[in-house]
Image (cartoon, rainbow, N blue to C red; front, side, top):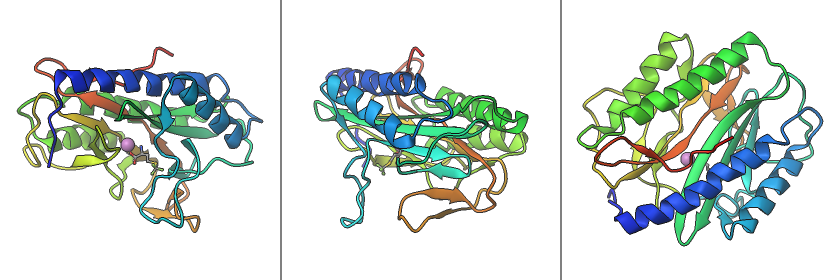
Length: 255
Ligand code: MF3
Ligand code: CO
């Protein structure tokens, strides 16, 4: 069931969305060679709590014996998503995907952005640019009366026309009083398919784009998703409200 939010609920999602956008701005200040991913996680957690919000990912998971242990997901190079922060130090030339979520007043926000650590290769730069542009093309299609896969097709077409591939095993999602709600928002599909979007629906659109094959696998830690060919991946995400006019990005950051 896809829920339609009231204006009051969208207000609350705007509020948590600001916190989520703020986390990315805060973390961005510390992304450089030598910093450990657990240091970045600590910075994110301190920020979320200072905003009277709580981390959305910490303690999340389907397997109760292996819940996500941190505030943010940090995924390096061929790690696609859901990387677990730890003692690993960032190195010059890496891509770092930062995925952040928060809950405040019962409502969730979810966003992600890929950063370059120092100077990166032209291919990695292109991968980041294409993934971010794909996100915005997807968002432009989040209009009332459109179908979910209008978003999907816009993302997929742009990515593939640039010689990259979209991950199939993980998808965007509705979001609100739960982190993951209906509908699923795949990054591949055919215009005119999938549920119809209505004003007041809120969705997290999140292209995960691989430089090589779209195939991925999950590591033995039960979380970290890797590209099957070891080539790099990028991830950009926003929580978006569908309105009678242009879609509203709830997790925009000014940084
Ligand atoms: N943005 C991701 C998602 O929507 C974050 C989930 S990480 C998890 O699925 F730890 F919460 F699973
Ligand atoms: Co998400």
